[in-house]
Each structure stands twice: as C-alpha cells, then as structure tokens.
Length: 330
Image 1 (cartoon, rainbow, N blue to C red):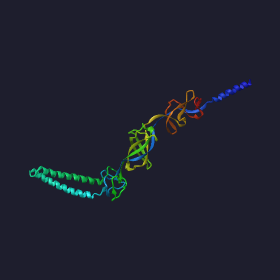
Image 2 (spheres, helix red, strand yellow):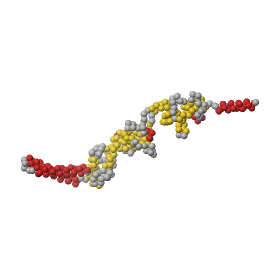
Image 3 (cartoon, rainbow, N blue to C red):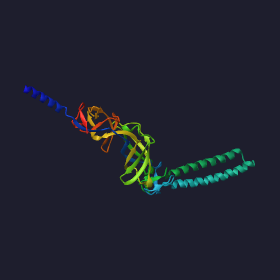
C-alpha cells in the first residue's frame, strides 16, 4: 500500500516539475517614425570633357593657355603656324580690292550704255570668285587657331611650342567643373525609391565640414546581373571648384518618413533564413510568428509585416521557450 502512495506522489511531483512555469519578459511592438537611409560611395565626373586636338597637320606657333587655369568659351588656346596662309590672304585681299574697283567702274559705264551686260557680268563673276577664295583662306586660318568650346578648367599640355601635331593628337583636355556629375551604383532594392526628383547629400574626406546637396538626373534602367545594382548619375554645384573629376566621395540618400513597428533586436531569431518572434497569447501560451524585418537601429529591429499593435513579443527568455510553452510574464 505504501508503495502505491509513493508512486502516486512521485508521478504527481514529476508532472508538476514538467509543468513548471517559465518567466519571460514581453511587450507590444513600439511604433516609431523612421526612414530608409542609403549610404554609398560615388565617383565625381566632369560635367563636360573634351580632348583638344587639331584638324590639320602643322607646328604649334603659340600656346596661349596656362595649365590648370580657367578659360572662357571661344578663347584662343593654341595657335599653329599660319605664315603661308596669311601671305595668301594678303594677296587675295589685294585682288578682291582690285576686282571690287573694276566692278564699280564697269557698273558706272554700263549705266551710261558704254559697255555690254556681258562685260559687267564677267567683272561680277571675278569679284565673286575672289570673295569665295577669301572665305576659303579665312577658314584655313581659323583651323590653325584652336578655341575653347566652353568655359572650363584646362588640363596639362602634352606638346610644346614648335611641336608638330597631327589630327587626333591630344594637345590638352578641357573640363567643365562648375557643375559636376556624380556616378554611383545603387542596390536593386532601392530601384523604386529613386527617381529624377530624388536628392542626396555628399561628403568628402578632403573636408568633413562640407555638405553639398545634389539631385539625381539619370537612372540606368538595367540592373547588373552580378552586382545586383543599377547606375545613377547625379548633378551637384562645385563651390569654389573644390571637387575635381576622379575624386571619390560618399552619397547619403534619406527617403520619406514612415511609421513602423519596432521590437528589441534579441526578440527576433532565424530558422532556415526565415525570421520569427515568440508571442504570448491571453492564456500565457507561446506561439511562433513569422515576420519580415527591415532596418536595425539602436538595438531595435523594424518589423515590416507580421505583427499587430496588441501582440506581446518576448524579448527575454526566448532560449528557454518554444511554441506551446506556458509562461509567466515578468
């Protein structure tokens, strides 16, 4: 009989031990205002860039520009030798002047009926031919002067005065850096958040106090298969010509504010690359809930989907529980 009572007592106490209540700490998700912040490296490009070359073969007579200095549009940069062309032009000008006088005399004589229309037409034809030759030699002389196609900063020279240059030889390079292009690669998950009105801020290691604003101007529609990124081009002003083409900088994008649920970071756990949290129901029984996570910030995790405002989320003691466990909330 005593053995029977001993077994009952043992089973009762063993069952009580197995049903021991576990204490956890749980609280509802917090609703906070947040936004996506994207920080990416970027490269500075000149707004415009042109390699200065020549269309004729000749020697450099004079280099007018100073390396690394600002030049204005249509400013003469390089003069090639044009002595022969200038001599030809001087001769043609004399012939044009003579032809003009002969035409004027013939016109007076024609008005008095002293010469025929044919003679007058011949004088006119000769004058027109010489005018055409003058235009031709002026064009050749203009080809021997290389002008700046736009305002910008001139680079170093690759040839000196007296050097023979040929078409295709790069004498120097001109950069427009009053405005600059910014090239960056953006992760594909932001492809629907960036448009031509998106703004960004730029910071550089050359001066931590400078914070320049810019906007996106071009979005490449192609997502790279390997990097899962897409290319963007932005535009910024260049205060005091501080930034130079080729410089690496950092871009920061701050997207629209939104309200989201946040739970403590240790409340979220992963199983087979899926995120879960433990919830406590009204009967203090644990259930497992799949969630979608977003930002991680200051020890909290953003929950994009899977929770309601009245859910009680366990954030302490999750290593002692599983689905179906009875708990006590501390």
